[in-house]
Amino acid sequence: MGITGITVDTHTLVWYIDETSNWKLTKRAISIIDDAEKNSIIYVSAISLMEVIDLAEKGRISISFQKVLSAIKTNDAYIVIPVSDDLINTAISLKGLEIHDRLIVATAIMTNSVLVSKDREIRATGLNVLWSKQE
Image (cartoon, rainbow, N blue to C red):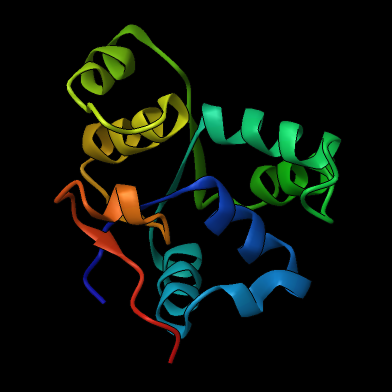
């Protein structure tokens, strides 16, 4: 595909790791993540892991935080990007997004990667975001 790295937003990550939720992803998104797992890097913003904890505690996802964390830790393709001064400084200019989305978009910008997200607000930023309609 030619993509050297991707960043996944929280729901993309959860839906990919939780095989019972794969149907929520587009065929293109699955293909991009599959390819990145084998041939590239998948960046995950630390804020996404906090979101997974929150979603799991509220019962809004069926997968546990531990299963998501285990999937990331056991696959060398995944790199968690911590919240840092540089990340926050990059996120400052991203007005109009919720704070967690600003940090996820900033992660994609800082890593110079393509973002895989269904989020309309994120896709409206003009950043290179891949999703495509359900095929």
